[in-house]
View (spheres, rainbow, N blue to C red):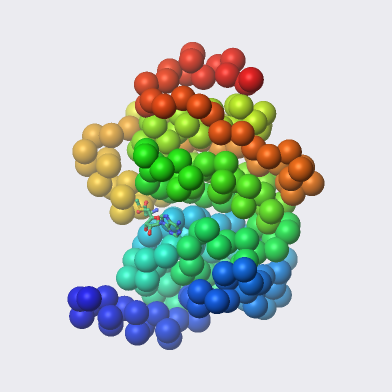
Length: 250
Ligand SMILES: C[S@@+](CC[C@H](N)C(=O)[O-])C[C@H]1O[C@@H](n2cnc3c(N)ncnc32)[C@H](O)[C@@H]1O
């Protein structure tokens, strides 16, 4: 392992904004912060918003700066990446920002029912060959709705038309309310201040000339957990047009 990585891992231990649960604290277990983020960390009742797969945490930190009346938690498993966000949060004393180094597979062990208001997923790997690993797949959505407030919103920003269309289909098939969908937020002049925050991956995709897409939908709460979400069965999601998608509600 590189010296720089090791240095970052050591520094990670000193950040007050960074939580790094051990495997046994989240595997079939309730992490000590579960249900306590408002009281024990933020010290307020403001909504909690997660960024999943936050990488270096650019979105989490920038949203924290722009919206002091909201709380933000960036989640990623890569310690050397999350270091960047936690260093900024600690350095700027951003009390409404935290980072969690954890596999998203264990996220139900970290948040209690109704503890989270919104989720952002920024430039996630589309996982074309492994739908069970897709962060907007039904397996993950089942996890999220255990702790999202009723009507909680999931935002997806991506360069991948495959992931965008797949997620649209998941929402449509499961009759989840789609709030927004745009296939080229900059080209269409649609990106507002919030959508214009740029992550490291986004900057690279923009340099390659790729359009950036965005969608937002409401995820039904745990009250409806008895009804499991169904996976769509298309294989080439990239090729779907908006017309193909409209009417796909069965
Ligand atoms: C393509 S990068 C995007 C990073 C950042 N959002 C950006 O736009 O620059 C995807 C990130 O998701 C994280 N990730 C993917 N699957 C994960 C999982 N199951 N649990 C935790 N982190 C995950 C990876 O570690 C990586 O940092």
